[in-house]
Length: 223
Ligand code: DC
Image (cartoon, rainbow, N blue to C red; front, side, top):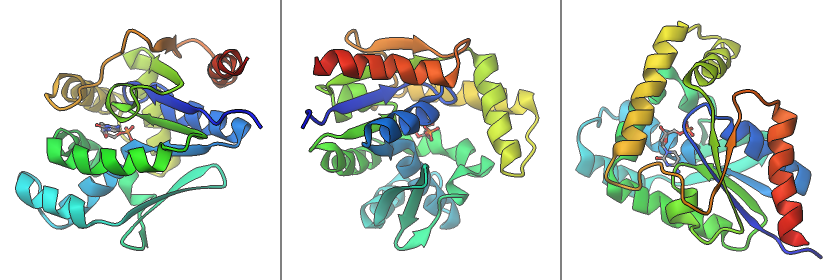
């Protein structure tokens, strides 16, 4: 049986990480781990409990939440303390607050530890902002996905509208820009491309081509 690899994918919001990672995981029969969903879950509960801005309480909350990630029928299923919050974590409100929550170092430490446990045996495609730098710096394959801001905004706006919320393109673009800024300028594990990551620009290629580029890396690694 061939070695079960750890495939780490980082990149800004809307660069195609989750679409690509899901399909690669399906092709290889690997586990897909959407780490952003975990930061979103903490954000959702912080919002519900009115804790935004109270970092100490958010850290306590993050310790207490029992976050379980599953991958069912090609989609991420996330339950928190037994409640399925897969849909709610994608709301515009969560989108608008998640960067602030994910900049809290202690929240990151709690979630990173869970992510390392989930991926340690390999056979995983894990995507986020710090997978290639902090969670699995020694991953077998390290990918940095990018795309132009216009493309990324179009993709996110489409996702919102498919879920029944129409958010104007300009508003989506502003939200993405502000998240990009916070995600890549924060002190705690900022989004950055490591020298040993392969950069894939997805602006003008098809999803099949994105997936193929990563599968090519896998083939090369296993040969
Ligand atoms: O990938 P996403 O859009 O679902 O991620 C939501 C937010 O979570 C993103 O703005 C930054 C944060 N995040 C992070 O800081 N580290 C990760 N590994 C994954 C996501």
